[in-house]
Image 1 (tube, one colour):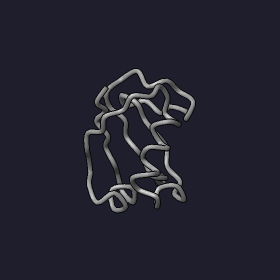
Image 2 (cartoon, helix red, strand yellow):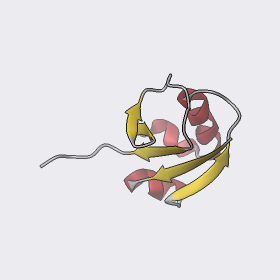
Image 3 (cartoon, rainbow, N blue to C red):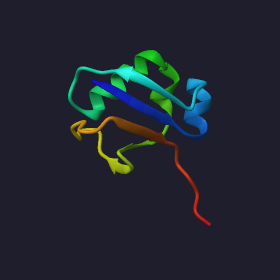
Image 4 (cartoon, one colour):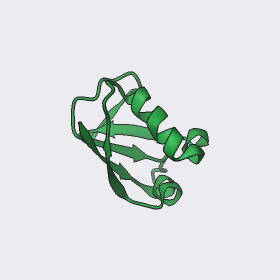
Length: 77
């Protein structure tokens, strides 16, 4: 399946793009992150959350949608 990936803040700076499409054949978020870490090794040391279809998910969540977003920590105020 093709996953639409959106990157925000520092994550977008590391990937040098705000969005991209990635072909993915595995099942869960952690496997997808391993693929991203191969493509963008600097991501492995960064703190971020993953949202699937605009809802935060854990790394063991199954990928059930066609959109993931990587969200860096943000401060409230």
